[in-house]
Length: 77
Image 1 (tube, rainbow, N blue to C red):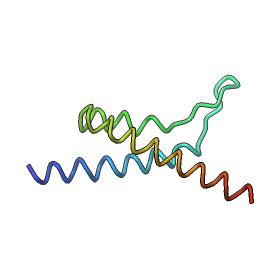
Image 2 (cartoon, rainbow, N blue to C red):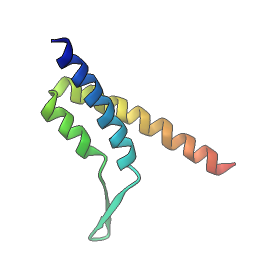
Image 3 (tube, helix red, strand yellow):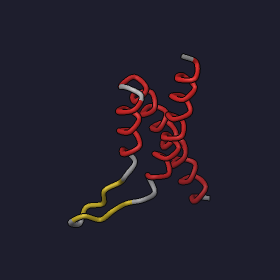
Image 4 (tube, rainbow, N blue to C red):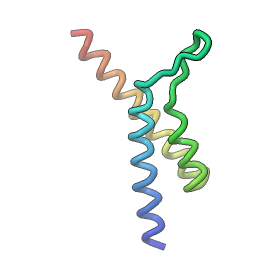
């Protein structure tokens, strides 16, 4: 039981970090840029379940919001 919980927590945190990294990659398809940040979140939802997928999505969203805001402020100076 404890090993399963540790696996889920570590897997979710790695996928949240991968989701943040994937925000910087875009694929142009028919003049539309498609980002890849949702792919790790789908994997979490399939492997760990919907509750862990939701929590990973929230953590990833906060990480993206804070990270991109910090990058914007750093370049603004």
